[in-house]
Length: 568
Image (tube, rainbow, N blue to C red; front, side):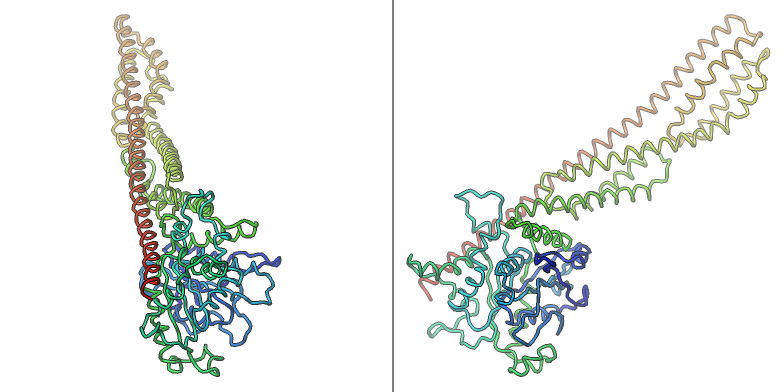
């Protein structure tokens, strides 16, 4: 059995507020927000006081947790949630939902029961319907009559925002509805039809056999059966004998396994094994598996639609859910990118090094986004994320340049300080001073480049410095009487050539930075395109599996109907 490792006890997920309207409890939503792994959601519904909570406690591996109660009063109110580690599926969480008992006349509000039933259907991947006695017309009529839970699903739940007249609605419901398990409690009959022994599953399918004819009575008889056949692709049945004597039933939470009926215990273990082994992770349209975070958002979206008086629409819910989840995924992925960049890039660094850091951080951030994102089929949010990351990268490149300029300026001050002091003192304003100035400037320029060879923006800083000293150099040249006029003219031309060469170096440095940025932009675009193709492949594979599942389910319905007419 699983242990209640994630939660020590159940909490209320959906309750009534002071105005009698449904709402999602923040405590439960916060718990789900912390679950980033896929969830298998099993909910139990049924008439009040039929022992629903006991089965859920057993799935949680606990003797108590969900309230049992031993009187005719309904104990569970709203929908309660218990998240436990999945016993069979590593990396998955089993989310158990125990619902308020249906059909309690004291509640007065019939629609309340309908919404509880609908929410259980919408939120779960496996729906357990719990009833007492047998599956006969009375049991099916209860399922139909008590607020028409099953037959009104098409009125209380919409799969698509717009549906054409010719569209097969049953296929749409099969895609998104959970598997269905009927748990028949206190079962005393022998599993036989005529003289033939049958399984509990065959017993359920036999009970769902349609009558031929088109009279109102026949239609009323067939309606709940047809709905169960058409809405739920996978159906399973378990029959449980009475677990204990009437006296012991009043203290079910205290009973040890030795005090329980052995056949009941065997069936309970078989039931739990089936749920652990066969209950699928919760999915939405297209077969997308959701996490605990998504489940919490989904619950809020559905409850808000009910509160506003609307009919919950799965297609609209997926759109709302996608916006909520993808915005959050984008924000967290961007934050991850920034954290990675600042932790790995100690500015200033060379452009190639910063580009490689950006490449690594960007790839990891996209993986974070894909893990958290939901239904971003057109890559709208991923494209926005890529744009935001590149904007941040550009800003970081600018910061890198600014930090490099600061370091180059510091080196420039240290290297050329003696030269500037000599100029200020007038040391070069004498015959032969120009050549001494030029020799000193040439040597210091060589020293500067040697000390800034690993820094970008060094040529820009040098160009700016030499440009500022151009007038001073001309002044020293004019003051040097040891030079002939021709020599001075040659020096002026040489100075112009050197300035042009320095400007060319500065231009080449700037072009290298722009080329690096362009290459990074191209690489990011290529990576985004590759992600789109990978996403399309994943989406096509999901749709293929989803279509196969629905086709198999519809085929089972046809085979079951044929066998019920010709065999049973």
